[in-house]
Amino acid sequence: MKLTKWDVTIASVALGQLVVGLLLALIYQAQPAFVAFWVLLFGLLLAFSHRIGCDYMAIHRPAALNAFSELSIHSSEPRFQFDGKTAQIIEDEEGIERARNGFIAYTLTRIARNEAGEYFWFYFRSDSAGGKPQFKHIEQASAKALLKKKYLAPSPAPIEIAPTI
Image (cartoon, rainbow, N blue to C red):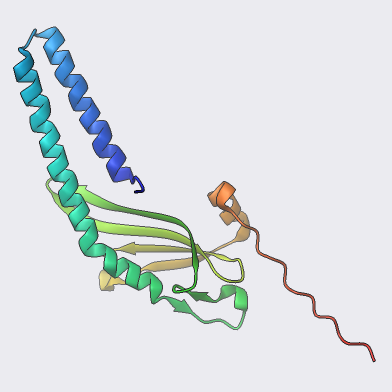
């Protein structure tokens, strides 16, 4: 299972709750049962919040994945052609945006590579107007800086040799 920023945030908040509980016990000489109750209560609230976030992602993820796989760009130049069904996904990041007690949007950001070795950026946001994702070509130098060790240079075009008679 891949950890997302959402999982790391929940884990860090839960750790913070534990530290605060221990500080309460040390500073105010609170009863261990009170501290255990406090930590357990907030841990359960965090787990519940995390579960709701995962459910929200699961609702919107199919639309994002469908938008990516259905994306097809035709060009006279092969390096600018893109097909979401055959593209190699290099980087994949999803998340949710929250405000107060509700969700604003689910997002999916991908960097993908076509058969010619060119890189493309895909961004889906569940609350975008018309549900259309953003998509753009990434220059090789930018892709190399952005992807670092994941970057693969495009393979050179095959050289055609004319037959000699």
